[in-house]
Image (cartoon, rainbow, N blue to C red; front, side, top):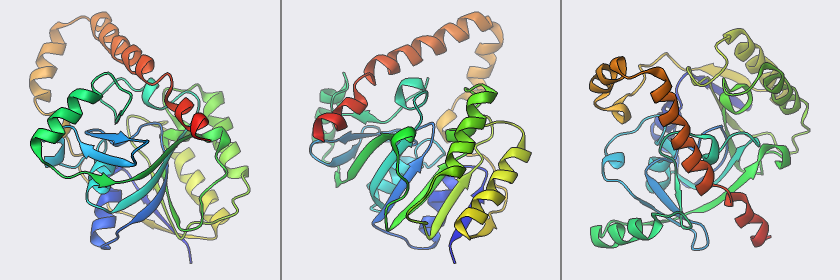
Length: 263
């Protein structure tokens, strides 16, 4: 019987994979965010490597997939997101591609470090064009892919409705449904109703993981930042966030064009 694992934080997926000793997985990652912070994916070569030693020392919700890829847990992944999410709509560090401005610098650092790189089959795709999981896929679904706080209520409702009305040719044996507090609609009623409808659609049983504490290693020195932020006007913080997102938007402008050219 298909299983849907429900959890609050995305790094809990990594823990399940480790606990069940899973390897060489094919994953459909439906998410607003990449969750591959700290690696560079060389798409033409089909390889990935760490760009940051620090990121390799801890697992959180923003880099759990990077660890899974580098450890051979996930060997094939499609990142699926809607037209108003993805690298260009994130305002923090994101996965790097071979076309990025700092790619050559990361390659040099990687060669000098003599750290391994792994073979990795990777695709990025729009949710609107996604036909559903392929045979053998696990489905990794973040609620913010459908009900992001970044999107107006009407868009959230449409994304949820469209997802549930899809005719999935393949029902995954294992699906993860992650709430992602802070990034998703705060009304958990919608989330819980969606979980039940998805379980009915997949004819699956729901397995809810225990609550866990959010891992904040990726926000080290947050106490210091908190003090600094208390003295900085909100308009300045908003401007900084907008600049970061603009930089990501410029860098990600041709991300999907790569796959169109490949086709």
